[in-house]
Each structure stands twice: as structure tokens, then as C-alpha cells.
Length: 326
Image (cartoon, rainbow, N blue to C red):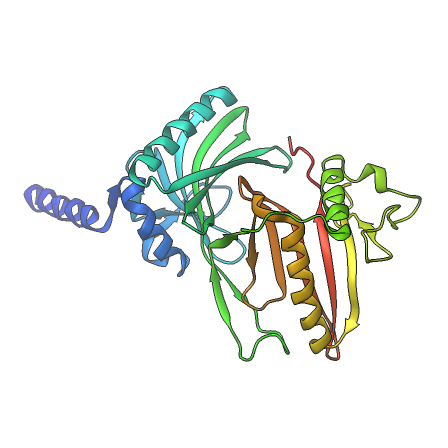
């Protein structure tokens, strides 16, 4: 009986070795990206007990990590590889530097966008960027440093793809379902011009670094209007003094009018911003965002169409506050 049990144990261990796969992040990245489109269902290796957030063992494990898991989110699961806890932020940053250097040695076209995301405790993120000749692909995936339990935790994070329905009457001919795990940006190639609108918009962008303090009045109306537009205002969307400067272009316009104005305003924005910027347009044409080429995590300016019902649309330009997050 003992021999049979031993033999059975060997078979089970061998089977587990086939099921589980431990490889480097360089080797795993493409597999992870593919699996994210199905919420990592192929990686799920059973529920992990005793975790605050429902978690699962992963069949694919990252060789350099201390633990690799899947974790529930609001639309699926996240893939997380843990690289340990550190006493100080500088120690954690050195670990991330080691990880980013290792990854770029495998993928020289890759770089990272480093910033702090403000939550209850700041999270420092290093998002993956795939550079191309005419732009770059900005991933939601990142290395991140979080402060929990008086320790600094280093993780690799890759979210499952969120399925977004971009179909909107008048702007798409048919229903389109997009799976988004990255955003593609294209470099603006023209030099910034000096038209009155452009000069004023750059003034607003400069003031964004103060949270638009110089433009605040007694109500939401801005004390400064961009040339060619009236009734510009400040919007504190989350009630945390994280303001947007809003330029109303059209209110409750028809599809035809808003479509025409959107194209005209997009050209004006391209002329105002110039070659320091990159742009992404959503597949439905309802949203375009402009970012700094060297700081793509910050959305500087956006051009937005919003559906107001009954075939009417608003068209707005938003300039976002650019204040330190830490």
C-alpha cells in the first residue's frame, strides 16, 4: 500500500508540473497579454484560501516572483506577480529599476512611464510602453509600488481586458465591441502655431500646473476665455479640487454639426499643441486625448462628444489640472 501511495504521489506531482509553468516575465508577457482577453481563465488553478480579496493560484508563474496569483476585479481578473516587501521606498524603487532593466534587455523597444497615482496611500506606477516609429502603445500593465502594512510592496500588474461597447448612433455604423488593454498614441508632427486660440490654449495648459488658480472666480465660470469661445468654466468633477478647464464648443448640436465642428477643432488643437504631444482617438470618434510624448500617463487635453439624447450632442474641450499627485 505504501508503494502504491508513493507512486500515486509521484504521478500527482508530475501532473502538477505539467499544469503549472514557471517562466521569466520576458517569456510570459505575450502569453499574459493573450490570456487577458479571456480574463485569464486558462491560467486559473483554483481558489487561494485566506486572502482579503478573492484570489486564485495561477498555472503560469513568473520565475523571478515570490508569488503569482489572479485576483478578482469589477469586470474580471487581474494577473499579479509579487516581488516581495521592502522596508523603505528607495529599496522598492531599486527593485523596480532592476526589473525594468531586465525587461528592456529582452525588449529594447520597451520603456516605462513613471508616476504616482493618488489613492488613500500613493501608488507609484511604471507603465509599460511599446515604442514605434510613429508613436507608442501605452499599456495598462505596470510594475507598481504600494505602501501596505508599513511595508513597500513591489508587484507586476496586468488587468484583464475590459470589454467596452463603443456603438453610438450617428458616430458608428454598426455595433463595435472593443477589448482594451492598451492605448495607441500617434505623434503630432507639426510645429505649434501662434494663432490666438493656440496662444490662449497654451496659457491655460501652463496654468493647469496650479490647478487654474488664476482663473477661479466666485462661481464656476472662468475669469479667462480662450479666443473664439465664451462661457469657459471650471469643473471639479470629483469634488477634490482636481479641476478641469472646460471650453464649450457646441451644446445640443446635430450629428452633422458636431461631426463638422469636431474635425475643425481637432485641427486647431493639433496646431496649438505641436510636436511635443501625441494623440489617441477612440474607435467611435467620441473622444480624442492629447498627452505629452515624454509623460503619457497625464491626459493634457481632451476633445469630447457626449450624447444628450434625441439625436443631440455636446462638444467640449477639456484641459486637466496637472498638479503633483504625491
